[in-house]
Image (cartoon, rainbow, N blue to C red; front, side, top):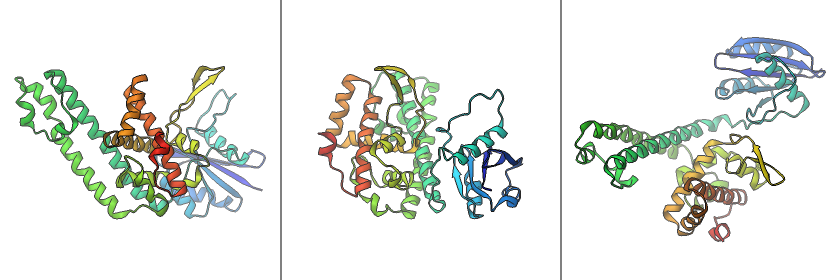
Length: 338
C-alpha cells in the first residue's frame, strides 16, 4: 500500500506523519532536527513511501538534501500558496504534518522549486550581496535625509559616497548633529568593501549559461545582476507564460476584483523577493542611462508616485527578460517602449 509522509519542520524539531491511501495515520512522531533519527523513523516504511512533503520557511536544505540522497522523492511545500484546512477547532504541528501528507496523497500540494544543490552556494552568495546592497542604500538614504533636514542643502547619492567625516563636520556647529551622520560613514565603507569581495568571488565562480547570456542586453542588467537573475530563475522553462514569470517576480497586482470593484487582495508575498529586487535595481539603472526608460518613468510619475513608476518599469523589464531568456534573443527596446 502506498504511503505519504508530511514533515512540519521548525528550527529545533519537526513533526513527521505518515498516512496511507485511505488517509489514515500509519505512524507519526515528533523528533529533533537530527537526520539520522529521521531516517531511522522512516526506514521501516521506505519501500511504501511514495513521497515526502516538507514545509519550512528557512532551514530546509539539510533535511531535503539528506532525504533525497537517501532515495526518497522529495516535495518542498510552497508555504505562501498552501490552502489551510477548515472546520477544525484546534490545530498544532501534528495536524500540519498530517495535512501536508493529505495534500500530497491527493496530488494537490502547492510545491516550491527545489534548487539544485550544487548551485545553491553561488546563489546564496549573491543573496548576501543583495542584502548588503540594501543595507548600504538604507545607510545612504539615512545620511542624506539627516543632512538635508539640518542644512536645507540638496545633495546627491554620488556625493555622499565620497564623504569623509571632515566633509560632514564642516557644515555643522553642533558636533552631536554631525555625529548622527558621520557614524554611518565607516559602516558604508565596510559594506562597500564586502560587496566588492562578494562580487569578485561570484564572478570568479560562475558564468552565465548560454540561455541567459542575452539577459545582459536588457537595460539596467549587468554581469552581477545577470547572475542574480540566472540563479534565482533556475530553469526558465518552468514558467509557461510571461505572466507566470512576472507574478513569480512579485511584479503584478494582487487585487481581488468583483464587478469592477476592489474586494480585497491576494497574497503579495507569493513569489521570489530576490527577483523582485533585481528587476527594481535594473529599473533604477535603466532610468539613469537610457532616455526611453527615463521618459516612461516620468510619464508614470505624472499619474502616480515615483515608487509605483519604478515598479512599472521593473515589470516591463521582467517581461522583456522572459522572452530574452526563453527565446535566447537580444533585448529589443522598441518592442518594450513602443
